[in-house]
Length: 341
Image (cartoon, rainbow, N blue to C red; front, side):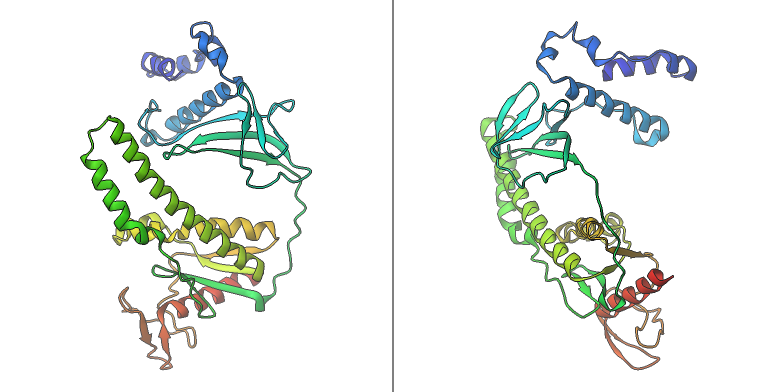
């Protein structure tokens, strides 16, 4: 399908009207040429074509995205999506899932699908460690009523590279830094991988060992962030945070490993949807708001505050501040102002 797209583009790229008239071949037409496509689920093929169309549209929307590329056998991400129609995807006895063209597959069910949820599609993916996962998309009618925010039950969170965050009550998350804990073991296994002959059996065995360590670190981080965000979403009516660009922070401040190990972006995503499910709110403060430089007592701004200054004393009122705690209080106050407004 991509070859067909490329040929059409190269032939008519100077004439947009011709490019619009000459439609690419549909996936069903390829079945006459490649008989083995009959072994594959129709919805999987249709979704592959839709994904290609999305990539193609993105290219025309913004040329810097680049023309769609061929998939590589060396990539670690392998997945396909299929749709549910007439009950062709269903869970049986909590132990099996029936998939189109595949049949029954034994599974370890993470949680039961609640009543009233209709299965719409599922995505089957394989991780680089060789494990298979099925992610099921369901549709349901939500009856979430927004709760009235109690001002006394709102908290501010300031992103703290060392502890994940410091809240407006002075508590710190105490992030375990799982990547740093496994760094020595990971370096040892990666050294072994670098000495293996690329493409050999030992190379692929060692590659799986490295992938398993990365996967364990990712799972530990996700588990910690899910539990922490769930606790905050249960305890508070509203949460105020800064709207930070973590990718830019990792690149500009040379804090790439620490930024990735913290998982602040993942944490705010988890927190956002957990609060929304409970009818609660998350308020994001502008990234240029001087939360760290402003005294939470008198409002004096310390312009010469640097990133190295973890504590400072206000020249206006003489209050001695912990940088992160002070910032969290300011974030909460600004969030409450936005909530009331």
